[in-house]
Amino acid sequence: MYHFPKPSSDMLLIMCSRTHARATWAAQMAHDAGYSKVAVYAQGVNGWMLDPAVNGYTAYELGDVPPDPVEYEAQMIDHSHGMAEVVNMIELIQQQKMSS
Image 1 (tube, one colour):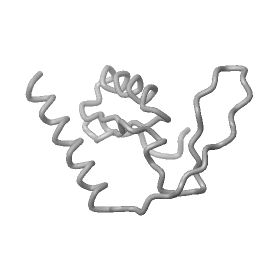
Image 2 (cartoon, one colour; image 1 turned 90 degrees about the horizontal axis):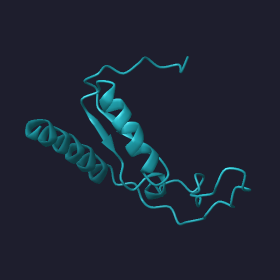
Image 3 (cartoon, helix red, strand yellow; image 1 turned 120 degrees about the vertical axis):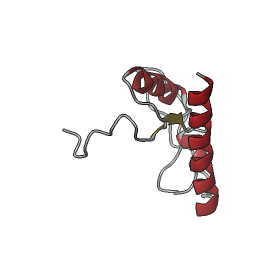
Image 4 (cartoon, rainbow, N blue to C red; image 1 turned 60 degrees about the vertical axis):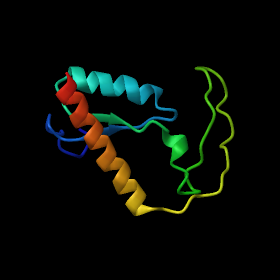
C-alpha cells in the first residue's frame, strides 16, 4: 500500500511534523503499538531549513485558506552534525529503556 516494507518493531523510527506536536502523538502511538525505538525531531519540519524548494508555513485551522509559504534562507548541510543528532537520539532512547 505505501510502497515500502513495514518497519520491524526494533527499527529506529524518527517522527517529524511541522512543529513536532503531531509527531509526538505519532511516536506515542508507535510506542503503544510495540515499536521500541521511537524518537521525535523536536524542531519539526520548520527546523529543516535546508532546501529552499520546501517552504515552511504557519498553522491554520480546518476550513481556513492556507497561508502563503514562509520564505527563508537555506542552511548549509552539515552531515557530521546530522549524524551526531541521530546518535544522540539513539543514546536517549537507550537511556530511557534502561530507566524504565
